[in-house]
Length: 241
Image (tube, rainbow, N blue to C red):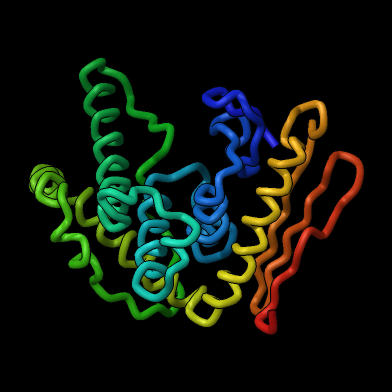
């Protein structure tokens, strides 16, 4: 649990982001951190810091979910007006633009560029069949701007595509046989969040050092909640649910 300066509420935040990112209790945030960033906690991806490349890989995983399930629409849809594919493009475009703006500002100031979130696209691959899936974004508003940006900075543009395509293949590798399992578990998580909100349990006087530990296995997903004094197994979903 961590404090959210924007909303004034406590919420969960990934361990490595404590003090850097605001906590939240939105189902879309849970889905994004647990499933679309699952790879960052495995030997499939190695980076010493938060990486903008990781966000691009996560968007590739989101595209896999969109093409093969209703998980994003049901639990993590972020822009119901312009659509989830537009959002993928917007996220990746903003990541690279932010990096380039930082680079240009540091160079203009005569400083050595030390990025907070390095564009580290050196991730480790397993034996994946990686296809070029970037075509699914070409009809979205904003693609033209990203392509024009890529004409000025071709390496960054190609790195985005590389990370996105890796993410799509990684999503298939990790989750193709577990889509029903994820759907069942997310349904239970939605119920859990609602109960917590109804109880006002998010308030700091109730939870000062709470943690939520999620384990994603081959055949089950477990969520354990530690309230500062003891651990509760909130729910476990299996393929038999």
